[in-house]
Length: 386
Image (cartoon, rainbow, N blue to C red; front, side):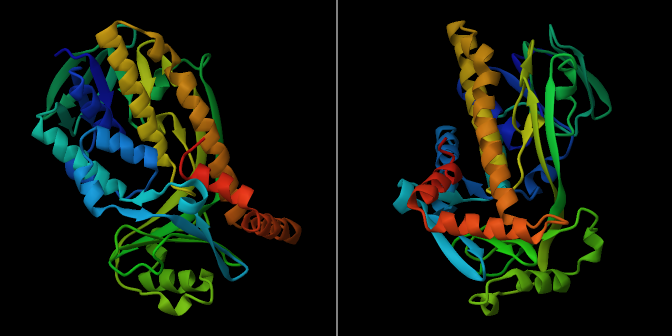
């Protein structure tokens, strides 16, 4: 079996890349180790930057996004038991869109199914046999299959195999593990606020988010050592209630969880994002803390850049964009890492953090709230405008 671009990983990054390549008549195949149902049901972030919305609409999957996505003109930051609004529309004349990653994934899967794209779900024992003249071997329905391609793209995440084929003497890895985690709960309850609330509280970080006008997503800060089995719904709601500002505590609607999970916080970057005929995109190359919801946006930005580079290569016989892919993407990656790290450090309580540091954070937030210049800077970063 032959193809031009072999994509390892069938999450939103791999799916979008396949769709964009197919629209440009570039033959491609996706290998995904999990089932389609597993991929479709993964719960992830839900805030799309305006640039991401444009990319998805350009790909031809904007219809349901335009109809069901919720436009947010701003977001809230809460500390000292007060809520402060960051009006992005007023400050930077732009908005974000609330539309869950699960919905983006389903839209992509539906579109690719309609155009009969080549996706192998439950592709087992994936092996990259050659990277100079790319050759891949895998097992599907108990049959061994080999694929020859011109390029391999790793959209297979932090735990994927693709990045391992960039030699150790060439790649640099930058990584930071945070000393706390996020405990998240999804429920069919009315959101406590019409826009997100990021909370810096004596009890730690909290986030009030949503997936729709009737579905809420909440997070609280917890220890890295916590186990999800130890958290009943009642325990979660009780701890969330403690983090909320006084003015809105009693408006919290509780209910049975649809999903609960613990997310470890990590910052990660690999350089370069390509080697010979292997290219990396999304979590395979970089991870940001979830504060500010940048992961999906950053991944789809990679894919948009890479699809353009492949279009130039296959249709214009130009290698320039492919050669500049890593440098161009990493410029945005590090700017995003800078923002996500700052936002995470400012809004969370770190274990063994002294009172001086806590007070400094409060005063930093006060300075932010009282400065239109700082608020504009924050609004632009939140919108993905670097």
